Image 1 (cartoon, rainbow, N blue to C red):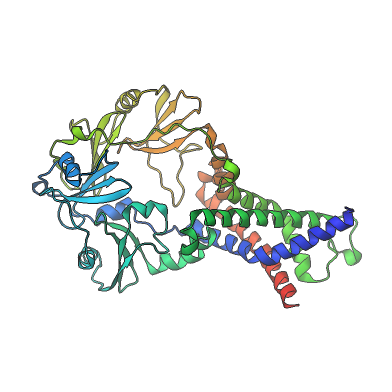
Image 2 (cartoon, one colour):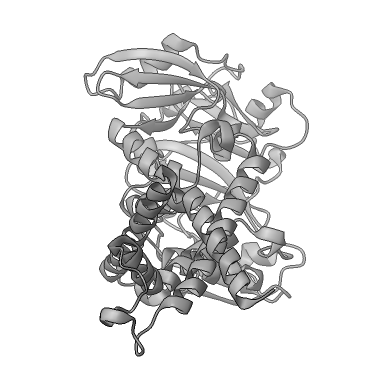
Amino acid sequence: MTQGRLARWLHLAHRWLGVGLGLMALLWFVSGLVMLFVARPQLDQTERLAALPVLDPAGVRVTPAAAWQALGLPGQPQAIRLNAADGRPAYRILAGQHWHAVDAATGAVLPAPDAEAARRLVQALADGHEVARVAAVEVDQWTVYRRFDALRPFWRVELGDGRHFYVSIRSGEIALDTSTAERAWNWLGSVTHWIYVTPLRQNTPLWRNVVLWASFLALALTATGFWLGWQRLRIKRRYSGGRMTPYRDPWKRWHLLAGMASTLILLGWLLSGWLSMAPFGLASGPQRIVGNTLPAIATLGALPQPAPDSRELEWSGLGGHALRVHRQAQGSRIVIDGQSAQDSLTLADIDQALQAIPGITIARIAWQAEADSRYYALRHHPRTFPVVRVELGDEAATVLYISPRSGHVAHTSNRHDFAQRWLYQGLHRLDFPYLAARPLLRDALIIVLSLLGIGFCLTGCRLAWSRLVR
């Protein structure tokens, strides 16, 4: 194929890919800018605890082990917590990929809350606003995420001020709240950016292929545009009239110049977005998962005594040691192996717990008081400090970050997540350590680069519209 014929085919491919994907690329830039400041709707730990009443010790007359036995399920529960979300203490137990509720006073399995119960639960948080509507929901735009699967279905309780509360019919707890502003901004932000339209997102394989192919074709669009622009751009031996481009049409001229100025940005963001979907298993690799699991149910036969002002108790285990966290409106207390409550675990506690896990070799364990390249905070991804950083002596070079306040493994990293950390998070979110430590500089850089990308995409959309009209 001659060079001229190749250029012609590339020109046609670029033109019609631009017609098909130009608007999508523009929306990716706009929605990414929105996501920088607006998080997707969620019920964070502080909000959740503030909505719970203080636990009354007199109302807890059943042990966690007895509550589990009341369910009559095989195996071992994955999680147990105790709170009074519906006004009376109840165990919320995760087992078989679903949550269940057991009355902490009688040991009876609680029936699923009806619409009136959901209304009463939310009314206490309504700040005087009336409940406008209660509707049964299996999946909607804000509960389409897989993390809600164990809680489905829901009662969606809609208040007169535009807030929506989702009450899990399985656990009897509030699982999510949204406001009118959050929903509106997220339609322009996360929903558009991730193509998280409910009917598509429910079909995970189809959604994944749509995102993979859309981002790959956008990469091809950008690459062909750069090649064509490079062929036409003249900086020294200019066109007649001193022009650097052959185009007299100002839209075509600015499209070429803006494209050459923003190509690296486009390629970086599109490539990292494509890699985030782990095409061809690029981000996969053997990993050692060391997380929190419940200790044997036989060890949970003691009647719990909530600490003063406790809103919730949660049971977990680390390396065979039983942990019980007393969550309060401000802070928490932790009990290890039935001993006295303490503010946090010590380094020796965590070291001893991990040493008890078969096959674990600890190469180094130490306190970490500030962010590093793997464990760091962003606006919508808070991190707590100090944490205990544990380097394991395994082939994958696993690193654990363990919260001393809860005993939970807050983050896990190893040498196999290189692509995820640097080629996706670093390149796509610009959260390189230097910028992550300087949030205002990072914000300014993302805004400037996004505006450059938006300007370039607008010129492309204008040209695409002209072509379609003709």
